[in-house]
Image (cartoon, rainbow, N blue to C red; front, side, top):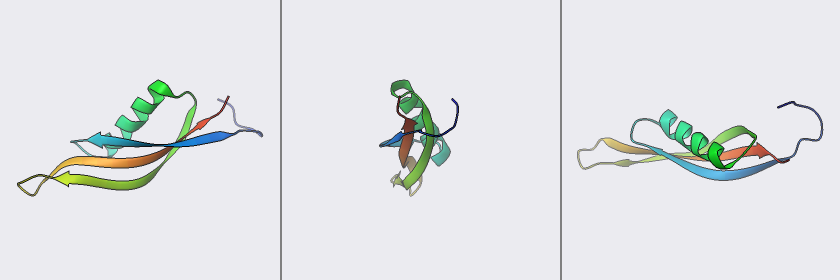
Length: 72
């Protein structure tokens, strides 16, 4: 990918989920989005949330991302 004038991007929202960590949730979202989208360039974390289990421990991390890709 080369950078220069005239680049146009589209931004979409995806949600990554992981039982391990916030970083794993981000990686899962980007990895899955890259299977459907070409030319992903950057992302923004919009929200971080999760689920707390009965023992009071975090059982799931959910990260809402805006993912940007360059239009052809």
